[in-house]
Amino acid sequence: MSDFLIECRGLYKSYGLRPALSGVDLAVGPGRIVGLLGPNGSGKTTLIKLLCGLLQPTRGELTVDGSAIGPYTKSVISYLPDRMYFADWMKAVDLFDLFRDFYADFEYEKAMAMCRSLGVEPGDRLKSMSKGTKEKVQLVLAMSRAAKLYLLDEPIAGVDPAARDFILRTILTNYNEEGTVLLSTHLISDIEKVLDEAVFLKEGRIMLHATVDDIREKEGKSVDALFREIFRAEPMWEGGEL
Amino acid sequence: MDWKLDDGRPIWPQLSQQLARRIIAGVYPPGSRLPPVRELAAEAGVNPNTMQRALAQLEQEGLARADRTAGRLVTQDAAVLDAARLREAQDVIRTYFEAMSALGYSRERAVELLKEEFR
Amino acid sequence: MLLKLLKYDFRAMWKQFSLIWGAALVLALVNRFTLNTGRRIPVMGENASSLLAIAFSVVLAAMFVIAVIFVIQRFARGLLGSEGYLMHTLPVRSWQLVAARLICGTVTWIGCGMVAVLCPLIMAPVDWSEMIYLPWLNVIRGLIKHPDVILVFSEICLMIVSAIVISISLMYLAMSIGHLFSHHRKLVSVAAFIGLYILLANFYARIFLWNPVEQFIDWVSGNVHGAMLSVSAAMVIPALIFLALTSWILENKLNLE
Image (cartoon, rainbow over all chains, first blue to last red; front, side, top):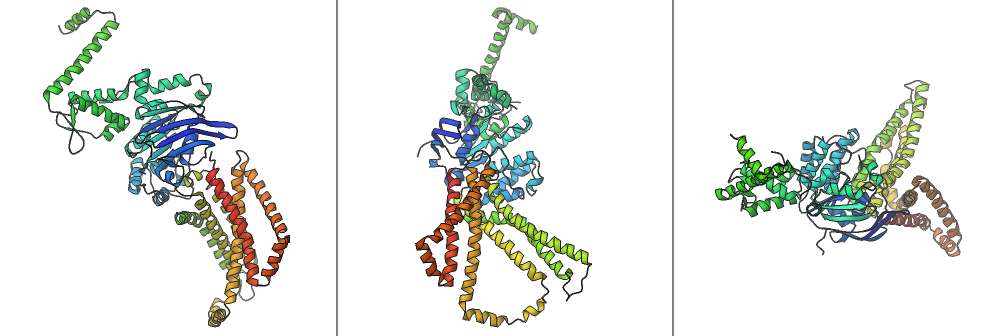
């Protein structure tokens, strides 16, 4: 067994001819909060989907907690996708039931309590909920598990700054401290203080992987400022900003 | 008291400095229990590991000590508190002189102006 | 895990079909009293009763259409669409996901078939009280004496189930093949369905003309059980191959973008 929770070696993924990841080597230990930072289309979502088994790599090796992606890794990964995944007919409590049935680490009471604190009525039908409320339900589902690895895909995109603080606080106060949180975003300034490590992705490659303190110490500037410097030459990503 | 973090420096020394100031200012009185790491981290909106490191720094400086029953207590040692207070004061003074020098005043002139202020 | 998956599949199915099945049965019951059967005095006018009869046929037709759409949607949206984000991150194997959907779909179609059979029975101008006086005991005694009848009956059921299973597996595989492409997935799925269908028909046409198979069929056909079981097997075996391919695609080629 290695000391790393996530290990990728030579990970390559292409959609048709277009490469989304080209040779990613990454090792992340347990108990860390890691930011997966990059402009839109840099491969953040692809890497997360590979980790949770929604995509299969074209080439390369990938293990989570020492195992290849499969039922075991899925049982220790809590995933917050960048989209809605509910069936219309369900209520939030139906999803809680489902999670309790399938994930041994799901804490039902915690989910109910989190709903109350987020102002979500768990007995309501999902169909009748607003988009923001549905997103809260997904956040509750993801954070009510004592998972080894949390994969949060753009958890603060598309919400106002007040809601961002709220979401970050919910993540910080609820994640399992022995577990690692990997969260992708292009809104770095909002999230920088929360991170242990930053991984910069550019065109499917890792540009930089360092601790936030190291970056600040060595570069004398924030991760956000460094990020802007590295990606300034890219006209594409400014358009992707919110 | 809000947490203020600036961009150019690592986060944990900033946190430990602000925690120290809170202790000196009596926000956390001598002998009292410091809030748990997770709570402090959430309050400041920072990573718990970073807050942990800041608190470890406080222990190093003697301003806080780990308690047997988990958690940390603020020191009751007046000498340690005074030393910390002095360190912070010196920091303020240094900042003053730096700012004055940026305005074009010599050290001596800066001291004089300070004295005039209280006449 | 399969049982847990089935629990949620059946819950979703029941949400959708309880209403349709209920409506069909209720309309059948209403029709029983309104249809001009000669034995009963029509309670309503001619027009109203024929309208009810039309409504009933529409509901019944809709039921079968919905049943087909249900099977397709549960796979296309439920495993290959946005709901797949949930299903494929559950700690289960792909074949379990496929098996659960297949079992639920099969039961749904059987349920629809049973409703379709039950409705005319309800509508038929039979006095139900008379049914009680049928010599049920003799029927049961007769069945025990000739267990063959039960056997033949269950073989017929097996054949029906096999036919449903191969139809659903064909659709699943067609949709999975469509999923392998990055564009025009729906179009490819339809094309794959037609292609697979032609392939299967051709395969049957050829294999049954192949000498050893022909002789084997001649041999088993001498026996009614053998004939029926081999028909079932002829459907179940390709169905299993389709399902294995479907599961393989989901396990190794899943591409939720």
